[in-house]
Amino acid sequence: MSFASLKKASAAGNSLAKLTREIEKINQPSGGAGPDERLWKPEMDKSGNGYAVIRFLPAPDGEEMPWAKIWSHAFKGPGGQWYIENSLTTVGKDDPVAELNRQLWNSGRDSDKEVARAQKRKLSYYSNIYVVSDPAHPENEGKVFLYKYGKKIFDKIVEAMQPAFADETPLDPFNFWTGANFKLKIRKVDGYWNYDKSEFASPGVLEDFSDDRLEAIWKDAYSLAEFEDAKNFKTYEQLKQRLDLVLGKAPAPARPVDESLEDESEGRGDFNAADITVSPSKPSWGEEVSNFREKAVAASPVDDEEDAMSYFAKLAEED
Image (cartoon, rainbow, N blue to C red; front, side, top):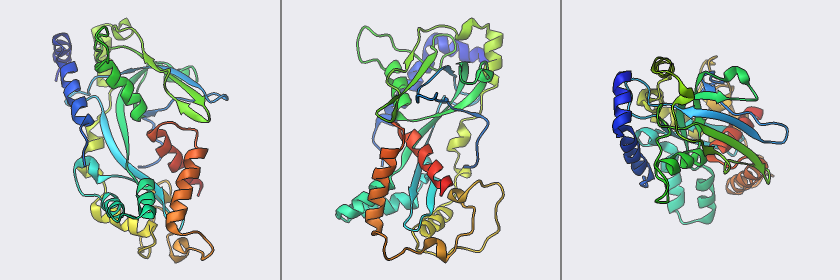
């Protein structure tokens, strides 16, 4: 799609209709590496609050949707190893953790259901954004980044596109001309991050820029399709091998260290029998999972599944 076609579709209202249809699909129930410099994250102050103004950007050139959605798992095994992997269910394929969780849930035992809950998949979204204001890091202002967010932010987007009341006008948050800046307001409420105060501003052209400037911003956007491309996911066999290792069902394979991987949660490290030995004095695996998840959620300053994923990943690095 050319930039001229993008503007024409905006005037005709086609983009909002397409996004609305995609929202309806998402609402229907259905069965990494190190720090990425393309990603932008809000920074909290000492009080645990954060503020920034961003603008969600249209789908990149040649792509259909302005967001990518990724299912992933993050949990700790009985021997202390972590499983932090993207789920093949993202691309409509069988996934070993999904299969295991189904078996655990269908067993009818409460202890198995607790394990399945602790291992459940989490949904994250990626979009391109233009940073309008970032008081914590002014150097980010005027630049295009990828933004990874969870259900709470996505719900705000859906609410803007599909308002609940008749006197509210639907808004396409991803539109250069008729979209609106998003005021991201994060508060620490009872130890958790809360996004309830976040809101869209009045609609209008992004920063009153000319079409030439908007086109330059659009061309700076990163591909989102790669996040949902099956070739960028590990195979079922690779994930199963990792899962068996985390659960203590298989010996560690002899393999060279991949220097591109940052930590053991992504497959790096010396995994051996000692790593997966469980002391007899420790609680059962079911009890440990239940206790771990309860403590992790209680201790983590988050109120969003995506934030929880980041918190669990941080715990894995500390281990």
